[in-house]
Amino acid sequence: MRLSPIGWSTQIWNRLRHRAVLLVFMSMTLGCGDCISVNDFVDITDMTVDVPKNDAGTDSSDPDDSGNTTVTDGGEKDFGPLFDFGFQDTDFNQPFAITAVVPGTGPVGGGTIVRIDGTGLEDGSTVFFGSQPVESILSQGKLVARTPAGSAPGPVSVKVLAPDGESRVLTDAFRYVTGLVIQEVSPTRIPTTGGVEVEITGQGFEPGSAVSFSGDPALRVSFVSSEILRALAPPRARGFVDVRVTTPYASAVRPRAVEYFTPLEITDISPASGLTAGGETIVIKGAGFESAMQ
Image (cartoon, rainbow, N blue to C red; front, side, top):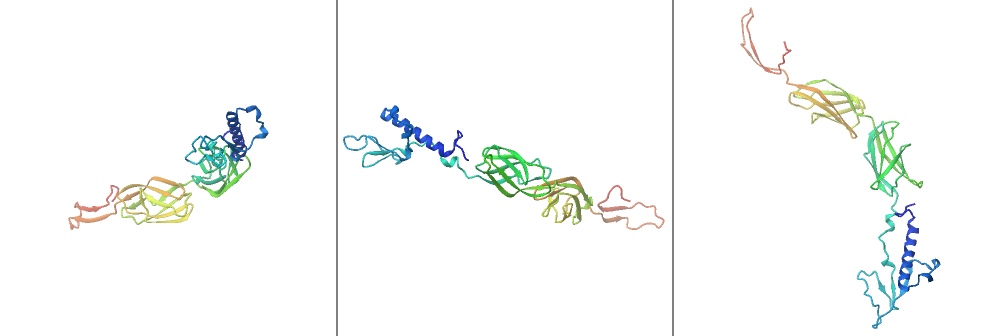
């Protein structure tokens, strides 16, 4: 049942306010408050009152330009629309509905704070994630709750049970996901030219997952399972890069997971010839040389 601001039903509130206004009006106009009994009360919206006419045979007061006050040929004035206190019945009679759960995903372990959007929501409602109930609070017309632990990854329906016993369900409104973790990246060294397939192992991977190397997207990503992804590394400058995996529901990063190195290249040897006995020093020019090379 939807209530007025003071706790009465809308129907009872409307009838009481109409009759209270009638009592005040007739007491002031007729000066006879004692001659009115409760049983004489009628809805103000159905009432007309005789008003005196002036010498011209018309109502001495000016009618309202908005048309709220009207005078009939018999000199009767309809006061119903004048007594509007601004309480619209729709304010207290919105349809009970839930439209969204934000965010729509969270870890299987629970603990995600979510907001439930809708209309006609009430404080003290119980929220069910699948079959698991949790308490909620009403904030600015929306319910706020903390998700319970889920039984397994996947979508669950969300049900709101109001204090009066009414309930509404939003099917598959929340999705439990496995915590996204990157455990290993192999190989850990690739040339700056890219083009090397990298295998990423971990958990929580999903079809449609994206892989990037310090912001540069992989040239290709293959979903193998929830624990394995394969990505074709893009070309990059020499140095360490972070590897990030982004699923439709979460994102995880492994810092300095891969080192890009300059491919080994020899461009010149000087001198180009020497004694058969050896012992000469030669200079080798090129790229990709490292201190541990022999």
